Amino acid sequence: MFRHQKQLQFEVKVERPDPMLARQIQEILGGQFGEMTVMMQYLFQGFNCRGEEKYKDMLMDIGTEEIGHVEMLCSLISQLMDGASPAAQAEAAKDPAMAAIMGGINPQHLIVSGLGALPTSSTGVPWSGAYIVASGNLLADMRSNLHAESQGRLQVARLYHMTTDEGVRATLRKMLARDRYHQYQWMAAIAELEEKNGVVVPASFPAEAELEAQPQAYAFWNLSEGVESASGPWAAGNAPDGSGEFVYIDEPLPEGQAPVAKVPAPELHHDLDSSKVLINK
Image (cartoon, rainbow, N blue to C red; front, side, top):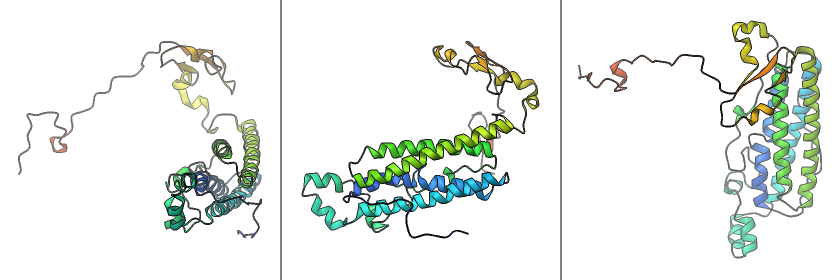
């Protein structure tokens, strides 16, 4: 059960309207790494969680918080759109400074949502459920969550420097702080799960089951010009799970065969054999 509370998690109050900024903020609302994505990702992971109850509870706590972040951004975008209208846009065009601000307005904010937020990115791409990861494997999902929070916080930080509106910045600072905590959270969960089951996903498919392919788990193939990659910890030393030693292969050779595909039937019209011309039957 979900219950909506009218108060926002944190205050949202802008100093002045800015339709251009409203358009840019759409990215951290409905973009690939926006709040809508982490909201749906954590909730679906929580809905489907079959592991320990503490993981499900954590996912539902944060997923529900992200619903509130979506509402905060919707309020922020609405406030930045206050006063915008087709007439105002035309009037703004008479003043070069105002035209620079109003000229970047998202027309859908006027035509589609009536000065409200949209479930889209900053370029108008609709939010997609394809953005979310909810695999049922806790370690795989937690790593995806850390990635999502890392990219999301990066985008909020970039937006922070795109405005001097202290009200907007205050809201973004709260989001930056929460995104930082969420990164701590996922890192802690990842460390705990790795301690329990190992660092490789899925733990239920052990290295021994790879049979003759096991050596391929430790070989770095140099497949680009230069050998600088040899100096990294991924090319020498122990594997993270301690199961083997990395080796660097400077000039790897292919180990498979050259594929030879069979010629398809003439009816598929690959035109590989010009001597076979189909005649209407």
